Image (cartoon, rainbow, N blue to C red; front, side, top):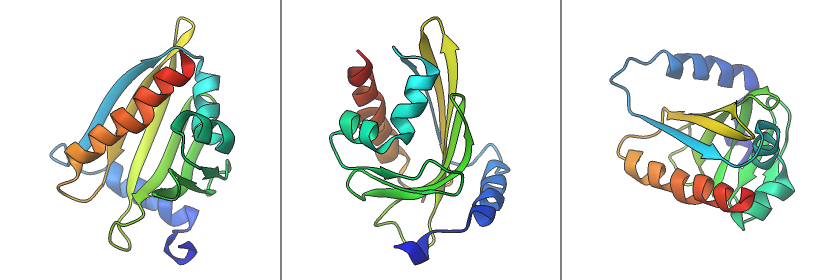
Length: 151
């Protein structure tokens, strides 16, 4: 698996290319309100123990820019491309069984609203034909579980 992880500089270049795709590209855009501060949401997404607690499946997350992560018992792997504490997480992200070299970008923008957080989430650059499946996966495996975790 390690040979399949890209170097951080390559990830940043990839993120720029994917971000520059035209408006016709396939994307997932979701906005979610969570009953927790941006700091708590940021921590839950980047702390191995908290991620394991809210998801119910093992997670190993290196919290550094360029650091690798493996969540949902290794089903999802990637690297952190950009980390702005309590504000933004950008990850090169892939499902373990995607074709070798297939990567996408997941971006979590965390905005305070009252005592909670408004998450603006964008997922781009994933293999064609997976949009509906991935969108459902984000709803079921991230947002619903985080809402329950922070309730």
